[in-house]
Image (tube, rainbow, N blue to C red; front, side, top):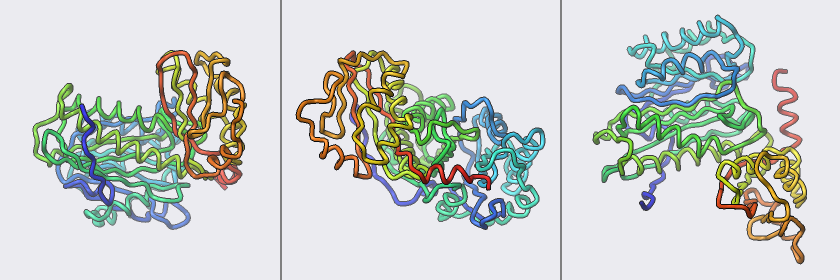
Length: 406
């Protein structure tokens, strides 16, 4: 089936009919910047969510996992500046109270509210400030509030991440919009990242869960900033059905069309996260092909994308291809060095595991001096292919994380 035509729109999550949002400063962040966000659907919505697989999970993740299992939600409440992780029973109590208070103000059940928090680990939420700010947050909800919500979920991000698109699904227009954050502690399964998406499409419960799981795997699970995995990752999708089409079901043509749109939206947001990685100056697509399987291709691509030495070379525009060979060799993928070739954009640097005769290293340095480029690796063993997006490792990354709590 041909890929559907995507019409990219201005704005983010509130580009979707029936979605309101807001962001306010509650005083969680000492800087006084916005730190409390709310996304609300004017009608009940199907919900599907994916959360961190880290064994240490924040209280908001545990509460939202429970609420998402019901399959229906109408609001997402997110805070930044304090992760509410490793805070014991108090943390769970605070997360539940946030959903209860928001539910009362919105006149919806507490279990139809998902909650998410990001920031410093081990510090309790200042609930006195949250309680005061929540009525103001609900009052501020508007169809123009998407940008304020995008600002309110930021931590060390330098800019907001929003995207929206429209496409035809079963010959009817469907809109999707999303907002994301996260630039460090980022190598999913998932990463210190949030992504909140809304759509006016109607989907069955199983169809939405399946399509969200697959879209996350092909987008947020294919990025890396520093190979660390957060305790707070949350991706949630609300589908309010206001497009008034029949619910999309597994195996249908319409679901395949919707999946293409959701995948494109999440991939765009995922690339934004890597491009804004803590201290990052480069966005690099690492593609491994010719592997014995897709699993091996992904193992090899992750090993290269996560290597501090490769990332340091990217930062310095140093064509040190030996570091890529090293990273391939230490991966769990099958690698035969005499069959490996490596290209930087269209310049073949390595052939049969050795520096290619006549390679133009100055051209490679020029490529690496750009803000965005591709490294393509062929293992010469099969047909497996995968891609991971990564960024460089700079002195600024160390500075940010050397003083994160001070």
